[in-house]
Amino acid sequence: MSSRERILGRVRRALADVPPGDDAPVARDYLREHGERTVEETVDLLAENLADYRAVVHRTDTGSLPGVVAELLAARGAATVLVPPGLDTGWLAAAEVTRVPDEAGSTPRELDRVDSVLTACAVAIAETGTIVLDGSPDQGRRRISLVPDHHICVVRVPDQVVASVPQALERLDPARPLTWISGPSATSDIELDRVEGVHGPRTLEVVLVR
Image (cartoon, rainbow, N blue to C red; front, top):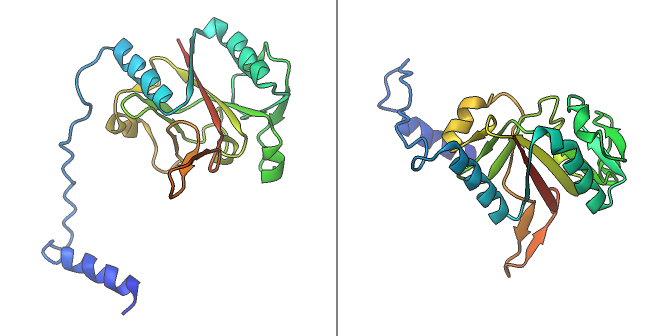
């Protein structure tokens, strides 16, 4: 018997007592968030957990955002920045960099040569310190947030901030290409030596914008 047959056999046995056509919804009576928080407390928790995952967190307002983005790119020494097609062009108004468009034909080698990438996000989860991208025009293709070594992600506060994963799932379309990011890419070998940048950018900077 193959592994496939064994697994399907277990599924059939588990469903043996379910009447045909029974499509009753699964009970989802778990906690939707842990504790009660104000909006400010939820945003503070997001910032705290992002930092705990070694993301670099910045706070600003809409008017100051272009200056902050320009400062972050300059501090990185970035000469090129990858830009999704639907990104607000005003975010880069103060930056003296070459904008590289997100194109379907770009190879991994070409993406790797880009210094930084700037995206928006779909939602940010405070309790887990997670940023979710869903491939919308202001976020671009999944690979542009995985190949370049420096990612700047803009989160609109408080509209895009939720407390918990269940609350985030209510806002997300499962048919879209979701990328869940909790800090910079990192992994550890058997000796627990941490290595960053293996599966994505080594540096993640999150800008919380009011």
